[in-house]
Length: 95
Image (cartoon, rainbow, N blue to C red; front, top):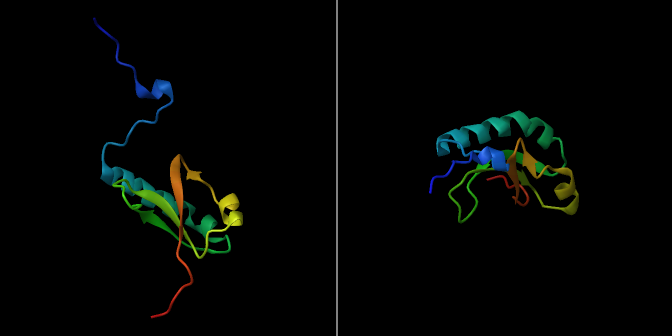
């Protein structure tokens, strides 16, 4: 029985990037593009790309001194379709 291949974009699924390197480069580009606006929020200390524990997929991360309900409300959950993770750093220490 023959069938027709369905393009995943027709079902609202975003196509995967062709490589991990391309995805990582896009995330670094997004971090650079949005860092100035994100850093304006009190409590945000950095923006970067990281690998959450137990995963192999890089994600956009916003590093904050303390995750608060206010920061969760103010900061975006996604940027340009990419998930944003909040990472609590605690107080900064000088070595």
